[in-house]
Length: 285
Image: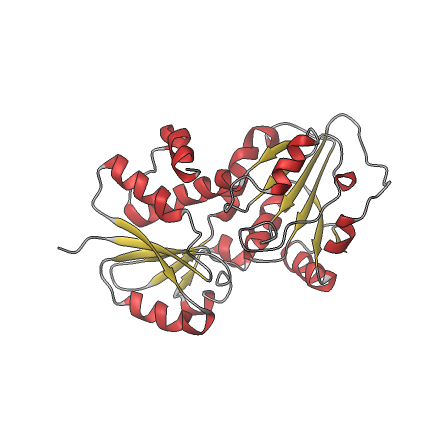
């Protein structure tokens, strides 16, 4: 007997924690369904989409690196928010086989910051490391909450293009990621009421990738350090940030938040968020 299923695609994909959390929610709600992972390389993306389009049991997929932009031309509809970000992380199949693309990264990312962002601030600044599909969602989300941003990466010209595309009216900045490894004596604005984020939106620090090399003299006093990497969930960046006295947010917070939005689209039920701590224990075991 066939059952409805969704999955996560990417290259690599084996490290994804999405199957564990979606299947946890399905079991908790007693729903018939499965959530899987599929290793899809760039050259196989079009064939993957074509094959799933005709599968009536396939409810859709989450999309991770490196396909968040490449998948967009293969879809029939793009949600306006995802179109503005220029990245899709959730694809939903309708009964007639049409495919719609959404981006749940932004609300998932903002979820653990919601209480802080409800407060007024004199100034908000975010230092974002990375240019990929997740960074596009973060830039769009933070621009909507009044942040000035500095984007770090290997090619500052790409960072400039990203900012000019997503928030052309903003007074944002770019810098090479290499500068973060060297100490700085920059005099940060430490007035009460300033809100600073330092966000790793790159694969640096992910299992199998080089570590994020950052000297914490680049992190303003009182900053929140946020790493969207989920494997490992407690990265060296987060450990060092805590040791230096900074508040931290891990990638599981964003993962669970964005997945909850996708789960409802795939399976037609709200994810049971009253068991987040139990889910976290499973994801980190």
